[in-house]
Image (cartoon, rainbow, N blue to C red; front, side, top):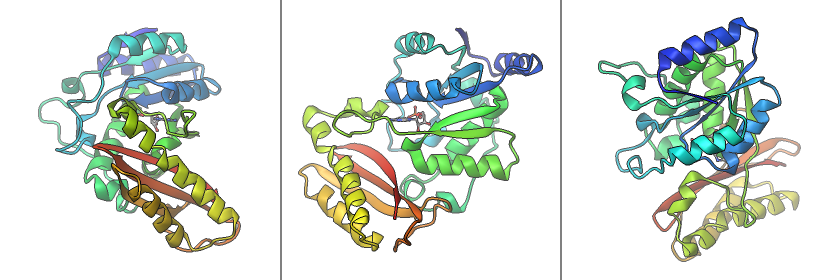
Length: 283
Ligand code: AMP
């Protein structure tokens, strides 16, 4: 595995790979690699012969009061995990080479970023759309794998790729969960044992929604309110949002039509740690 830190060098390598007719797959991460990230690499390897893993903690997608400076950066451990996973190139640039002096261009996506994460974290998706576009231009992939764990992010990236005519196939990877149902996340290390236990209410909420829809409850608003109640009833937990969207348009949905697919989006705090989760539900 080769480690690259310069965007220009990564571009030259990617161009050579393309000329030698290699299929390039990219997996973008902020590092602190875990089973979720490794599942994305495995999925990319099913389609692409050459895998580029990017590790970059992107400052422009963090809000002023968020955890940018606390974000875990176990680089040596990540290198070992990436190597063991069969990654071919690890692209890990520093902030100055990604956003040099005089940098001023951003990518924004409108409707799909208005609610949920976009509403709670202003400018987050501008940061995401911009860095993903830049990393696409640097790594020149044929395919890119993103996790369903960040469902709204995935919807934004699909929009950007389609709207800007990028010739890249976006592949979604299912959420990897711990035995307790808690979705694996780099931020889980911030949780105390009690907070981690309390956080399992998020998955219980998902199971509740699946059962309610299976039992023919079509009022999605009611189900969302029930889940908010379940979360807020746990000491130390606070719901940030719970809502259903149409799986295709990502527009908020209040009533379910039989046979249609919806995505339940959830965000909550366990102590001071903010967690997100989601599930696709077929009515
Ligand atoms: P991050 O490093 O948190 O920015 O995540 C990088 C990529 O890994 C994104 O596409 C995430 O959606 C994906 N990812 C993070 N956690 C999981 C998980 N538990 N299961 C599947 N994919 C994940």
